[in-house]
Image (cartoon, rainbow over all chains, first blue to last red; front, side, top):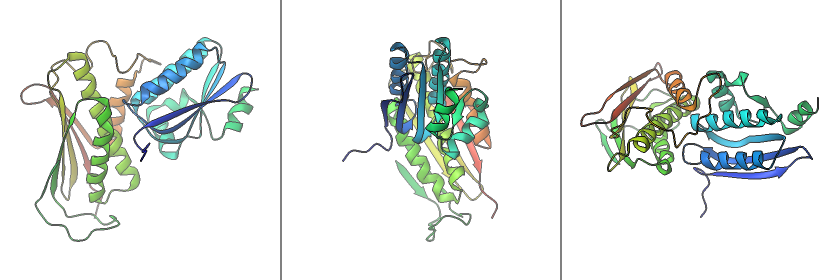
Length: 120
Length: 162
């Protein structure tokens, strides 16, 4: 029996010529966060301009995960790109608000919204 | 995992009314990232006995996860021998108290952060975020030295009004 309840799955997906998405599923904590970090770094190294991190299926996100997302935002900005977060749950949205990270992250309800914003 | 019930609880399904239970649940896990999820599951079980709302239980789970993560980092940077973390949770009608105790010998946050690559923005890194989250998500946070070396973090969440 495969359980993913305490694990993390990260699936890269091409959105368009400039944009890749990472579909996350599961929990992001000190154990699983290195996988997310590696996937973000792989995208950065591949020269991706815009990265969408899809949080719709993320059940848990702690400070380790937040730190990695912050690092990803910085790295993408350094290469004139962007890292946007898509579809966080109400719970994770609240964590962004509590920590003030809602001012640092670009968060969108849906991927369509994120893509529309990028093309402005 | 040891459970001692001082007062046998009557059937308390659904969990909305404030519980009158008193119990202590202790979990000892290896001080490695793999087991923080296990600690979170145990705390979920314990907190659910107290009639907290879904959001409150999630807050507690995150706070305990942060405390465990800090313990793992202290052990990683200090190379403590035989590192285990003990998570002692006590429920009573007034409050849930969770003590996360490690036996690492390095000071909190010391050394190169292997587990959390530096990611600072506006001067706040993930360790500071973790401390901030704990402060906000539970009612009381106390950090003190543990007997015999190491650190004990105590988190307290007051029970809801009856």
